[in-house]
Length: 43
Image 1 (tube, rainbow, N blue to C red):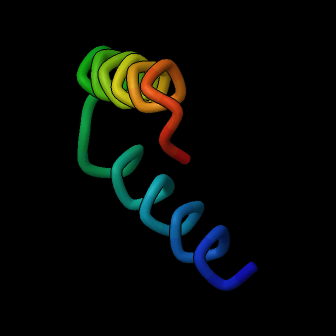
Image 2 (cartoon, helix red, strand yellow; image 1 turned 180 degrees about the vertical axis):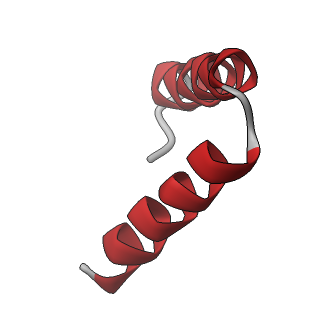
């Protein structure tokens, strides 16, 4: 639970520092990375 809270705070910080385009790109990269981990059977 606390990890999720930390992540959302981090997410807000990112939104504040990056412009929307950079943020979107970063989100795409992280979701692709997460998808790869899922494909390999990692959590």
